[in-house]
Length: 302
Ligand SMILES: *Cc1c(COP(=O)(O)O)cnc(C)c1O
Image (cartoon, rainbow, N blue to C red; front, side):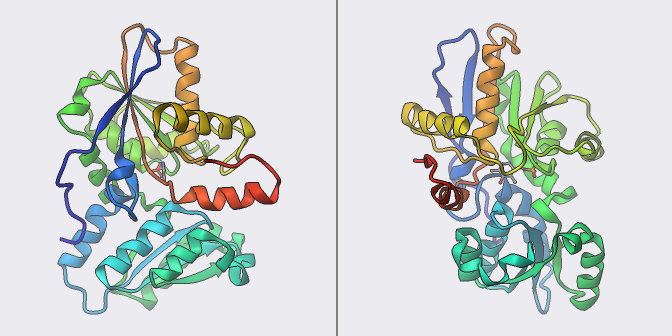
């Protein structure tokens, strides 16, 4: 089995906020140095089952943007397993600039082949997938962000005896696989809060199709749009690191945590609620974000 169960339980830490609710964070970011957070669990069954079938010419193909945590994770899996990987990357213009992008550089160093496609081509991923599956019939083709049924099943491992002890389970939401898994496998008395960082009207339906439960709410946490970084959020992330010694990144976990703090201030959660936020990782993205911020002469993430 390439991806293993953790040898020690993932720590849950209290974030002392001195309000009438209790806030905790589960450090899924610590699960693996290269295959970060929720991406580890989303790839867990996809990759393990694929390799158990002993494909003659193993090959993993997937999709992502220039700073994608999923691309970074799949490239690391390929490196670990010693099998070739192909990343279909959104943005033709990156063809000659990938060396300036820490995520793509990391993927390349892990041996991933990168194929850059136009935004238009990327939008029609289904066609690309069909084409690739014909060309490489044995390949494992993982969808963007890694979200599929196996991914949802893997997310179950983020829940355990300890997580049953909370009234609210919060996660950042991109493609929806992670929240779907939490919603599907949590206890009946638990409520799931999804801080969506992508403005996508179809998200709720997509999630419902994967969980078939109505125990989750999506709360807009886009803060200006997917991938947009505000100075306020940078301040929040840097304060959080200083106060609690926990790093957050500006695309998912930083936005989730800022939104949860706002919700607590707005008294969204009933008194004495116990709230658990999942740190879904993605810290590899900080370096790339800082390069952009530096170019714009803005404050950096510490
Ligand atoms: C991909 C990612 C998410 C979103 O997960 P989905 O299953 O796509 O909703 C959240 N946090 C981090 C750090 C991620 O990399």
